[in-house]
Length: 208
Image (cartoon, rainbow, N blue to C red; front, side, top):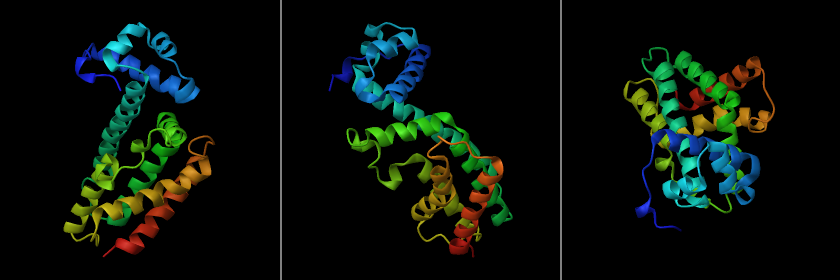
């Protein structure tokens, strides 16, 4: 592993371009076949710039996956604010959340690409998937929101992290299975049906 203490912070615009290009090349070629030369060409920067900013292919790969996941976590927080921000009818709100989240999972080509990439490279980068629930930002954010609903008396949530994991699986699992992780396009009616069913099962377990 290169010495990251000597890396340059660099231009934010160039870093963003490198991350976008890296994700595109890693998804298309896989980690082993992807080259820094190809990423540099796609980003419109020199190979030296990539080494100056990231140190090499492995840290660039990890940065591309993690930065993309962080951006998705931020977007997920916005989705939570829209759907579970001010809740009076918990069934209606959770169904709205489930449909919105399932649609995002089914429609986001970037999200699907990152998931497939992580699955493909899991044996080489196990830390990308072997993370504790509290270290997964999306699950932790959802757990915090479910805990708030529990405090409001709308849900019975003895273990918010566990509840968040179950809700996420119920909402996204069927969509991922039917779409082969974004490979097959689902129509909106099917997405809504699967998500609504997931929310209904969750409420049977956690509603007061």
